Length: 244
Image (cartoon, rainbow, N blue to C red; front, side, top):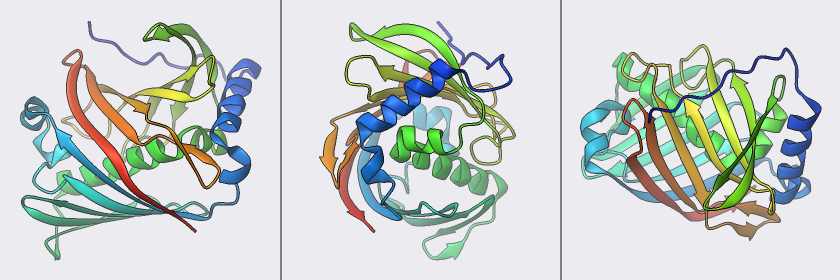
């Protein structure tokens, strides 16, 4: 059925939640990560047909087939060059400011820019994984245990304020494999847009490879959990990675 993300009821970070996140970051290569200043990454992917009809502006499948992206880790800066059958889209996200160009022309439509801001923040989260959460950890709590593909998982609940894109608040549930300590899934809300308010999505991480001392996921699968339960949305994969 429709699944939400539990809210954090505490006023601080529980010792168990912090310990789980710290172990996860260590398993992903925390020491090597701390030497990284900027990341250039490329992706290719495919959208499922139904989600293109449900969220056409957010998906923007005409421009979002493949991408090259750069993140500056010591500053809230991310640049994305998306390409697809309709041409190219460039997004620059600096703090809370976002600019969009389609085929070299500025696009200032509020829904387009708001969607681009949400996507940029989400993709930063996907790539930085436990490191990004640990860097900004002010509030988190242990969410119990569950299983994925018969593998036990520890849940860590982390609120995000501000939320993704222009959202004021969002909530994240992190799934940490109890054996490998890797981050295997993030379920999160995306309340920034009128068209996404109340929606819950989740992304699974797979195909981990050690590059530059860090365990990176190279395969990603996104599904919608709410309002349409278990709707497959997007699968994509890493095609290139440069560090510093």
